[in-house]
Length: 131
Image (cartoon, rainbow, N blue to C red):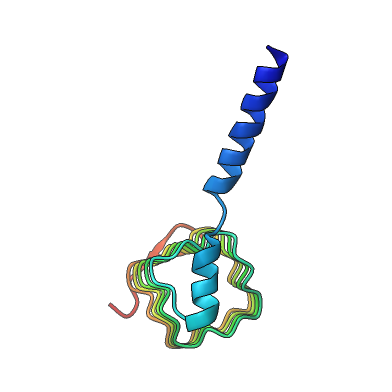
């Protein structure tokens, strides 16, 4: 009985951790092409990444580390950036139309000209700027 319980605990832990991990193939696609629409990049380490004009529309970037990333003119339309770390990121001209930034860290992030139409901000409010 004890052995069965241990096996179930290990299996449950493995399943739970795989459910919240990024897809390595998606991360490789982003590295190879600079684009990854509808990709699973949860928890990705993209600290300091150069992703100018990247297509990340409808991507899941929840809890991703995007500190200091260069995201100028990137397309985050409909992307999930919940709890992502965007401190010091350059989001100038980025399309955040319909993106979820709830819980995201945006301290020192540059967002001049960013489109924020229907964007859920870190405090839970919804911005309609640029609609």
